[in-house]
Amino acid sequence: MGYEIADGSEAVVFVYGTLLRGESNHFRLSAARYLGEARTAPSFDLVDMGGFPALIEGGASSVSGEVYAISRDTLSLLDELEDHPSFYCRQPVVLSDESVVMAYVLPRRRAGRLPRIVSGSWKARAGA
Image (cartoon, rainbow, N blue to C red; front, side, top):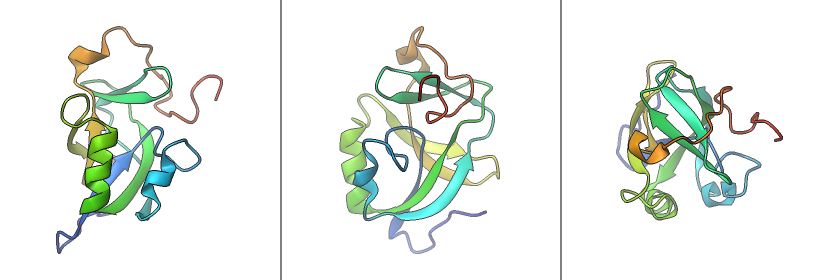
């Protein structure tokens, strides 16, 4: 499954938390084009930050989420929501099918000792 947008008019993003369908910030993707469910390559950790998760590089988990094609305007709105680059950093990530998309990643040094979501799924976390 390839996610490249040839003309550069859209960005392709992987979301894994409150931007997922059915979650509190999904409305922010109302103008986006849903491309499907996906998982990252097994090189991340998903941690619970209370009301939202964070994707951390350098783990050994495959994190589940969804992929969307979004306009540059929506990308700017997501950058603001995710406080990029001050809090999360928007960067390329590799999915399990080896495609490369953008995602908001929290630098490991900011994760501290936050509880890890072992399943790699925000929706399947305990109590959800």
